[in-house]
Amino acid sequence: MGNNNQYDIIMPIGHDQDITKLSINSALNQTHLYKNFIFIIDTKSDIEANNIKNKLNHVERSIIIKTNRVGQGAARQAGIKAASSEFIAFLDSDDIWHPRKIELQLNQLQKEKADFSFCSYKAIEHNNKLLLFNVHCKKKISLRDLLISCPIGTSTVLCKKKIFNENLMFSDSRKRCDYITWFKIWRDLKPKHSVFSEYAVLIIKHSNSISSRYWTSTSGYFSMQKAFKSLGFYPFFSYVYAFLYSLFQIIVKIKRKYFNRLLKNSKLIKNSDIKHYFKN
Image 1: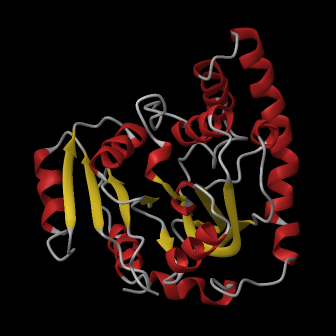
Image 2: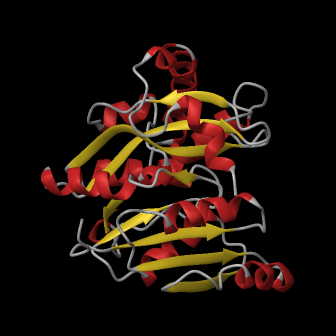
């Protein structure tokens, strides 16, 4: 495939961790080459920032931005501002792409003349690299769907840069910045979107993340309440919707963990090949 329609990769890096090398390599090995690889080193420590920067010397056509622990959302917005391609792709520093992810996803997005695309992904436990659950995306979604659950993994998103402008930027919220951003896009822009149903991304889940501790602490519920409030919901309704959203998660998480395992295996990332992606 040619590179007439180029894209920029946006990767925030908050910590110097080993898995980032695998994430970067998964982007470098794409069958459809990128125009710019934009790194946002988001740390207060100059020593850590320099260590990270030194490990990026081998990346061609890289743009490196330093931010002062502003958070994932604000860091992504800094990357969006620096992007110059028609398309942008988000990749977190501990997630992994299948080599054909961009090629196939971009082909479908252009064929459907869409502005925004996301794909199915497999959630992997950080320590033992075992499959936690599948998120199988097969249909287009509405704003109502986002009030029940969000199937959009940030590292699965490929979209036109023009979506983000002065009136709509990536949320700088410390928690749920991705959910807030996708909700605003669906509410304010109602984007024509493409859903690539193949599993093309491995998203790494950490034991201390909000989603991993959703049922063992109140942080998940209150993070959603603050998200709805920041989206303009009245305080009372932000509590109500956060409660309803949490209830729906019981069904959603059961479906993802058990029923989605029964689906026909992916043509791209197969369960039997997962550990292969974590080899240097």
